[in-house]
Image (cartoon, rainbow over the protein chains, first blue to last red):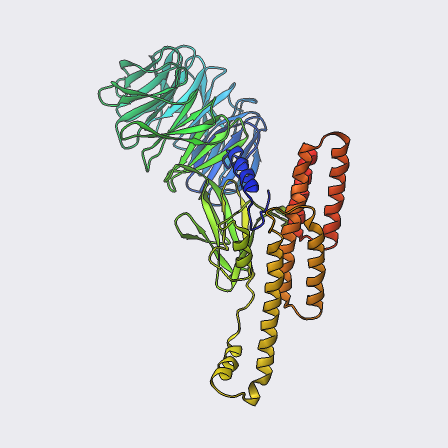
Amino acid sequence: MIVLPHHLSAQTLDTIINERKSFNQSPQIKVDRFPLYVTVNPAENKIYVANHDSNTVSVIDSNSGNVTNDIRVGTGPSYMTVDTTENKIYVANEGDNTVSVIDALTIIR
Amino acid sequence: VVGDNPAFIGTHYDRIYVANEGENTVSVINGSDYNKIKDIVVGDSPAFIEDAPDDIYVANKYNDSVSVIHISLTNGSNDKKIKDIMVGKRPSSITADPGQIFVANEFNNTVSVINASNYKKLKDIPVGDGPISIARGWSNDKIYVANYGNNTVSVINGSNYNKIKDIPVGKGPISIAISKSTSKVYVGYTFESIVTVINASNDNKIKDIQVGDSPASIAIHDDNNMVYVANKGSNTVSVIDGSQDKVVSGITFNTSPANAGSIICDNNKEYPTNVYIYVAIRTICKAQPNKGFEFNSWTENLKHNSTIPINTSSVSNSPLNSFLSSFGIKQNDTSAYFDITRYGTFTANFKPLAPPIPAEYLVPLYGIIVSSIVGWSIPSIVGWINVRNRARRLNQYHKRIVSLYGDGELDEKDIGSLDGLKREILDAYSKGKLADQHYVNLKEEISVLYEEIYNKRLHSLIDISGRANKELFNRIKDDITDAYAKGKITEIHYELLTKKILDYENK
């Protein structure tokens, strides 16, 4: 994070180039631990991410790219399916033998 | 609560079907009140469900079979298993169309094809090692299989059940997703940090896209052609724009002051400001000042209304050019570029240019040349001469700043000259001999030089070791704080130097 004066000396230019080379990482949205499964709800323009190790489902607004909610579900969410007719998301929690139901509109478990 | 170790879910007619891998059943749940209607016993370790119009197909991992459950249109309690079909070893994944069911058998490297009307197995197709994920193309009659064991994707002709080709991909391909709108095939991995894109018309690899670690799950939003990748190794989601197959960043651009300029990216495309947009990674964006403004800096807005300066590259990098441009002499090259590598809100800051000779002064000037002095114009002429003198003075100081570069290097010796110059400028300003904007500009230019000298001093520490290094470092630190306190360096340069100091301390 450096701002450069208008005049770039050859040395500072080199520094920038090296910095850019090392910054080969690609931009990502932060979610919870061990995101095992991702699915899209086209009706609501929302993305759901099952975070296996933190027992949550992250809801990402596909228009804004922001994580709008982290919904607490059962233990070890591992798989999800979107029911577009009912507008619900079902989450299989392999750790506690339950299925969590998320209402896509109210975001309630 | 459903059965033991629920692994997979399907839905049908307001019913939910859950494969319970731990107890060899599929639970049928009422989708309105969420009460369990019944458990249907299937094979050993059901782990995958594929929905078909009137059936669901369940892959039973440990006894090499696929169970067919017939779905009752009206009543979930009438749902029942109608058949177990023997397939290959360790069925891992199923894809079905109205005619056939394709089952990937992970342990004997085949895909079984089953007739969907009489449930007879038609053929075992040899594929790569460890087929783990299978998907059907939307618009072509092709089946794609990710082979976890030998790092390939097999392509199968969906009509004659022959393998078309094996496409070499990255290590540990574990998932396949196919775009409905573009027919492109996306491959996710366990042991890579990439997603591979395959052209479904010629089945050649288009490219690998850098994402997070272990991108195992991929979902495609067909309405807007966006691809979402869950990176289980880095606890993140990457967003890929399917139209250009590039990872995108969610960006909000701002300009400050609001109408002082615009953001131009790619090939001279103007990007909207004040709205959240997806911008492809490595997009080069330029802050383009409007008339009467010049580019100052890019900043990134952080939470709690704070900002930090960010990397930019100036178009012109000769000191002379940038000095000239900062005085409005050459305005074409004053924009600055930076490339998009992360999510964020970025602001291009502009500042007003020192005004040119205003039109009202041109009238008396014209008067001097053409006719004799007319009484009413005298105050204007005085004003104009004043402006001209100030501009001349500005130019003098400016030349002296530039001359500090004269011996080719700027070093500690120049600090004395800089201090003197700074005092003179302040003196001229306080006597009204310099305009406000000129004074600000000169102060900034001087700050640039101070910053460069201190920077050099920090760099020179590398050659000194031990206690001397520590002592010198502390002295430079004190000098910098002192220079800032005395207004020799501007806030932005001070921040930059502080950052350098921190970096150095961390080392």
